[in-house]
Each structure stands twice: as structure tokens, then as C-alpha cells.
Image (cartoon, rainbow, N blue to C red; front, side, top):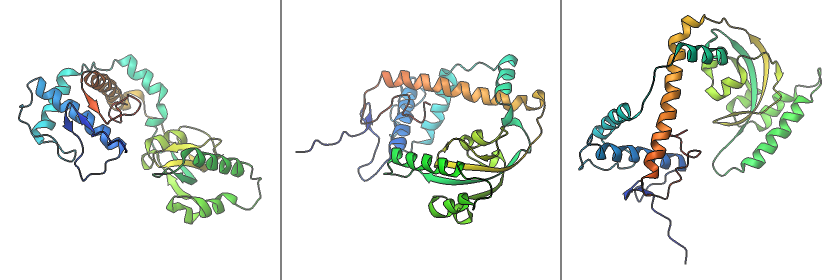
Length: 258
């Protein structure tokens, strides 16, 4: 006789409706939100009779109480001028204006049920093959994109056109911008969509504004970084004091505490 699956819950509050099918990331997000909702009740910011979330949707009162709770519980110092200057020096390319690249790619998409190890092996083999192409040979990159890329751009030989950092997912942009490389990149580029073999065909450098001009944006980036760290620590504390069943809330797993 097979054991029944554990019902996901936080301190007895069930996170999933009987008819729902919820992925692991969504389940972790619901658990983190419920930890915060219950903390708001314990601290008197939310009434005891507040309705439990249905299908992951909490009441407006609960959302507002959580905002107040986080403002009160999370200690968020203002970033110093020195910290802002260090951050700007380390991430100067993020604030460059007008930088563009002409690129194409072959995408190996990570989809539900895919064997990620096998997918990576295929992507690495493709990368090595395309890096070995000698000048003057038939354009294997374009044909490879047509044959195997999981991106609609494959029909155009993988061409993405001219891109700015704002056109790309942040993790994709970090690998392409603020660099001097042209040609097939010597590494796979990882993004939320999967694994990419990327060729940079041309670059147009941008201009770098002064530190003073981008200081507000730098300070906001540091505030967000500090908030994320404080929220992670606070959720870890709440989780350690709660009875959590059927959900993996380890720091590495939870999207709300990364």
C-alpha cells in the first residue's frame, strides 16, 4: 500500500486546494507568504479571524499588514557613500548608456521533465563544435540554430538582432555586456530559459555616466540587496519556529529567501 503524500501546510494552514496542481516554486512562495501572514497575526497587525489564503491569494488586509510587519522588523540602514562607490566600481557596466551588441544564439531550453545533465552535455558538445569552425567555412552556427534551437529565432539562424542590456533577462545581460569578446563565447550562458550558445557578431560601446549621475540608481540597488538579505534571515527565523509539512524551505530552495 502506497503512503499518502504529505499535505503542504504551515502550522496547520493548508497551502494547496484539493483540485490544484502547484509547482515547487509556487508552493515555497505560498509557504513564505503564510509565514509572514501568521507573524502579522501574532504581532497584532492582523486580526485573528483573517481569512486563510485560497489558492495562494490572501486578503488585502493581510498584504497590507505584511508590508507594515516588514517595515517594522527589517532593519535596513541607508547605504553609505563608500559602499555605493564600491558597488558602482564593481558593476560599472550596468550603468553604461547606449551599449549594443549584435548577437545570435542556440537555445537548449530547460523544460519540465527534461534531463538537465543530458541537456548540458548536448549544449557543451554544440559549443565545442561551433567554436571549432574555421574562418571561411559554411556558416554552421546558423544551420545549427535552424536545426536544434528551442527559440523561435532559430528559424532566422538564431539571430537576435541588435540588443541592449534592457532587452535581455538580467542574468543573460551580465554575460554579454561590459565585455570586449566578439565571436562564439567560450562558455555556455545560463538564463531562466535554459542554456545558450552565443555568438557576438559586433559591439557598439556605450558611454559611462559619472558616479554622481547614477548615484540614486546605485543606492537603490544596494537597498534592494540589503532588503533581500534581511528578508531571507527573517524568513529563516520564522521557519525555524514553525511546523512546516510538505514544503522544502531550505535557503537554497526558496525563491523568496534567495
